Length: 376
Image 1 (cartoon, rainbow, N blue to C red):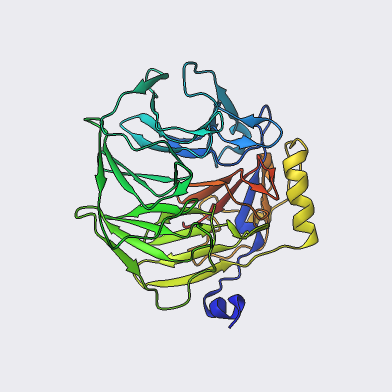
Image 2: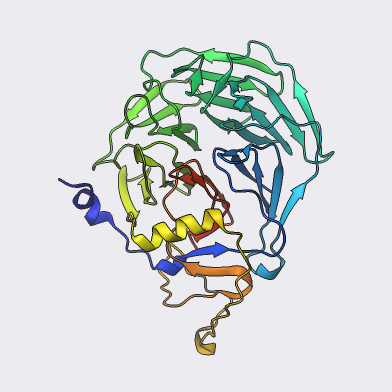
């Protein structure tokens, strides 16, 4: 059975214009992959990353999200000093108005440094912790209560399946031991729903397609066996939780084969759905290259809307019953097809919208920003 027929029953044929590409006036972040992204208040924050021509970054960019006033959306580079050196393949969590950055690659070497950025004072600090893991990169980090939970990644040149928990209040690390755990891997995804952490995919001599659930009270691992076939194995994808669903976008399915598929795992129904099929057309490849190489300009295209259908309280969305046949391209938000195939990007959810930034394809990095409406 081919990948397409496995998931045909669950495919939702997305109207192409459910996606929007966001273009803004002013400066934008340098193209990059293997950065991190979080939501803070009404903004998206991008930190670190790398590309082949410029190397690694330690700049922090803020994108103020104003979907109802897109002409006011801007990227702002925050001039905060004394932070981490240029870094990539690190992890971040947000806790008590502070961004905690752990691990990653600095000067071609893994590190186990823990930095904190206080958003009230806008100051970085390097923290001293107890029982820290060895230097690590390409791992995942999730926040649960006051705990930063680290899984997998590279340690001393080997992929691992170690599970570490940092009590952020006491700054003490604890290594959790469990025989029944996922195999060693890097570039997987991790996200939290209710009292469980879900791990999907990753790579270690092969691309994984397994899904695991970690009980965050007992730290026991459980393999998840869905009722239908999972996506083909991949790494470098993104995963976010929306209501009772995990959304998986992009990633690398084989060496040199990035994808722009969008999958949904329904936690309640224990089923996978393919929401957006892969598009590797010549046009998508052209757009992919142009988006990474040429500076983006604000779109001046304004599509005239039918006034009888112009309702400010109606928004096209992925998980609502409303349908939408046109697009609204005013002020730099332009309806489009799915983002070009990529891995090493980031995805976050704010106000029932999923934002995708950066990543790369065939080692050419992006600095584009896309948004997908998920619900009304």
